[in-house]
Length: 111
Image (cartoon, rainbow, N blue to C red; front, side):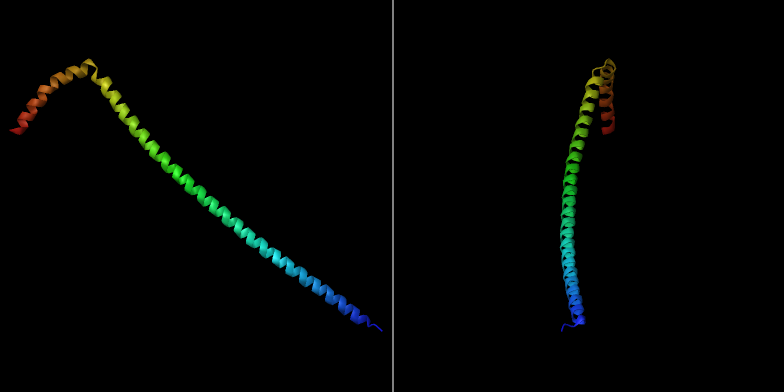
């Protein structure tokens, strides 16, 4: 004769075994997801770092170009002012008058 309690115990054991197996699988899946999630986060951090390095290099290049352009504009502006001002009659007369004055000042300084 079969014992009704033994059937119940074997069903309970089956349920417990199935439950343990499911819990183990869930734990393994969570671990795999955690590892893949960490790997994905590492890739994102590395990609962000590379983007920052690239932007930093680009910024440096733009600064060099800006400094060069500013220097060039400054020199061009000076030359433009010199050529424009030096062509005026006032500048020419002032230069004509000041040359002898400069020569006299230099001679007086030497003595």
